[in-house]
Length: 114
Image (cartoon, rainbow, N blue to C red; front, side, top):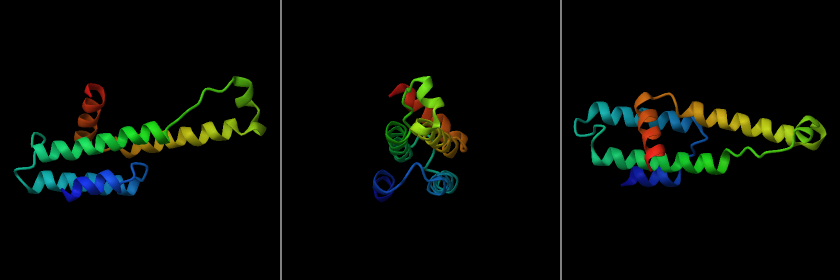
C-alpha cells in the first residue's frame, strides 16, 4: 500500500508538521470510511508502521548519555549543551505524538506488548 510505504520511508517522526498531517489523515480515514476502524487490519498495519518509526526515532534521535556531574557542570566541555539539546529533542518527539488520544493509546499498547 502506498501510504504504508510513504510512512515507512519518508515520514520523519521528529517533524511536528508531518506528524500532525498524518494524525489528521488517520482521523479522516477513520471518520469518513466505515470500514476503517480501530479493529480493521489496514489501520492496524498503518499504526504498526507508525509505532516502528517512533521506536526508531527514540532509539536514534533520543539519546541521553550519562556524564559525570563535574563534566556537565563545566559548560566549556560541551556536555551540558549536548544534553540540553537531546533533552529538548525528547520533549519534541513526545509532545508531537501524544496529542491524538487513540493513536497514543494504540502506540503505548504496541510499545509495551511488542
